[in-house]
Length: 139
Image (cartoon, rainbow, N blue to C red):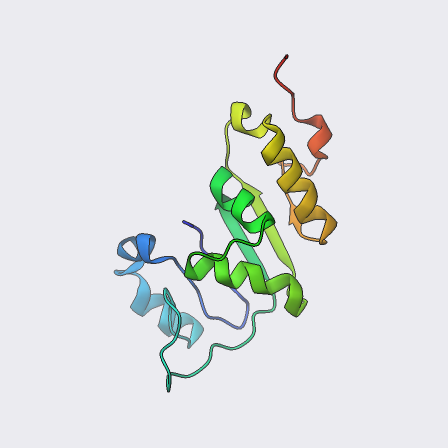
């Protein structure tokens, strides 16, 4: 998963694959938030991260949205997302998919599954609209 989440109380989190993009900004982020930038599960003895007030997933890829909806927890970032609804942490997802992928039934079902769990999925340019408004490819 290639997304960042920022909580008002910290910490920032990034996936290991994106760690190289944040390595130069980690000290600045850590100084600004007063928290460590996490990109992996903590080791025994390491301090726990404070509970997030909210999680923002942006940009959320086709793969990320489908994995999140199905509870797949095969990365650190997806593990955090998988736990969030059960902990009552609000999650907002901003999909970044092309119209061909957005029109696929698996994607449409995943968005509806996330919304059924009260996860806000923002679709469309500058607007929230229902998945039923995503054009479906003719059959």
